[in-house]
Length: 225
Image 1 (spheres, rainbow, N blue to C red):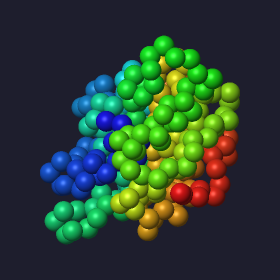
Image 2: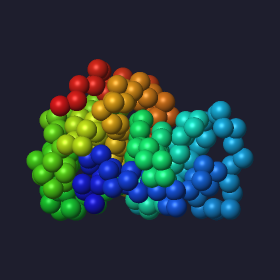
Image 3: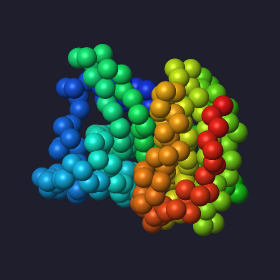
Image 4: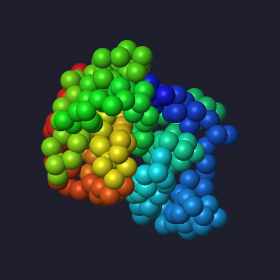
C-alpha cells in the first residue's frame, strides 16, 4: 500500500489505462458520493466539483475540464489529465493528482510523539526502499502553512516519473494524515508546478481549505532529484 501511496501511483495508472475498468467521464463526476444516483450534467468546458469521504475525512476537489477522476478506491481519489489507452498503445500522460489517507500504524511506531507528525512520517517513508519503490527522493522538508503539521518531498522514479508528495496532519481526525501526490512522466514534468494552483488552490481536506498561501509555501521552482 505504501509504495502505491508515496511514489508514483504506477499500479493505479496502469489499471486506469484499461477502458473496461474506467468510469466514463459522466460517471466519474459524483457530486454527492453518499447518493451515487445524483450525477452532474456538466459543461465540459467548466471545472466540476468531486467530493469523497476517505477514511472518515471529507475531501472536495475541482476536476479541470477534460480530466478524468477515479473514486473507486475507498482510501484514494485520483485525477488524471490523460488516461491513455491500451487499444491504441497510447501511454498515460500529463499531470496526475492522487489524494490518500494512509495507515499511519504501518509508517510510524504507535505511541511515539513528534513535533511534526507529517514530517516524521515522510522521513520514515523515504528511507525505506520498499515504501518508495526505489525512487530517488529529496529530504523531506517542513511545510510552513497556518501552523499545521505538514511536510513534502520531491521524487524521481526509476520509470521516469517526477513528482511532489505532500503530507498534511488532520487534527480533527487525529492521528490521520492526508497525502497529496502530484506527478507526471518526465516529458510532462515541467507542467506540474504550473498546475498546482489549479489542482490545490481550492482543495478541501477535512477542516482545511487549501489556498494561494499554501501554494506559495511550496518550493519554487520544483527541482526533482
